[in-house]
Length: 434
Image (cartoon, rainbow, N blue to C red; front, side):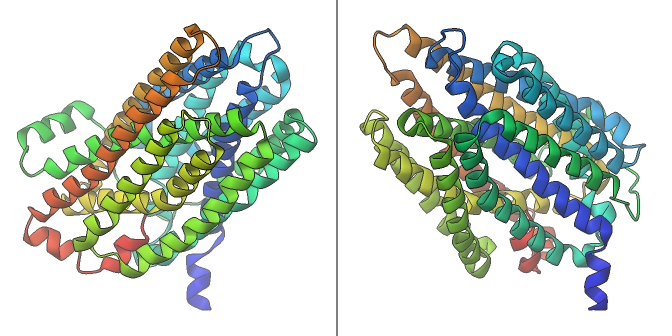
């Protein structure tokens, strides 16, 4: 009992609470704000115009997020990381309040909201990414990451169905007001985090780039990590947006959207259990290949039914939500392995900034495809989702390369020989760290 109290002190509990609450913000934006934009016809615009605006929103958001990472590192190296988390939390609260105050006029100010959202989230996540190591000792991180993941998954089980029901039975404005109150809780918890130690970190992108250039062979795994992040950004987030659009077009219900997200997230806990129980580094292909094949088949089913089959959409939603959590976990643990194997602890800020920039680049690319889909489908006569389905197919190709790039990271790490094998003596740590 005494040992547990040392792990889950007020700072540790606050970190978990912040992680869950920022997850609630993502649920609110990626599911229900997108759905609210889709049904907006206050100014006579059709759904294709709304799809274009959703794409524009994400282009501005992701571009702001990625570029901001290249600058926040200069200040992170000399300041308390928890301060950045608090600034970001305050910014996110202001964004949600703005969404509430704008109401039906939100779509007119969507680019401004996207910019402020990206700027606030860049402060929050850049501080948060580098905070855990300074607050939780390395010997306690196994249990801490496991508990944090359980609570985060629980967030995606409870809140989607709750939010969807409130929006359908009351209205979106009340849901935005409730969301603003939850963001205030995020601000409070962010102020309760007290790092126990501060690592001396550098931040010099040019110098780090030269280091990568002069050590091409030894830093090969890191280059594959950047490639992996690009394909992850080009597929994962856009899949979520496309799912929301397809579900809304066919179901016209926030409750249905929330129920499916909650049920399938609950089912994903079973796949996480299988992953934790049976995964070993030599079995990566055993998990990766079936996942990308099944997700691709589910996408093929939607395309074959022209995006009008509710059954095909539900199957895709289920397969993707239930299985993708394993692919994400493998990807995150491989990235952590690269940092440890290459001894890049002092360059955490530079490597994180480049990872986030590559992630944002992929996200911007897929968001541009979404804008083009809305534009070209709007030019076609009648109600057509032809280009939206083409975008879904292209994003699926990115997803395949996302899965394969995890395997490429694995192979490049293996080529590090003795150092790699020494760092993987304790598989338990990698299986729960994501």
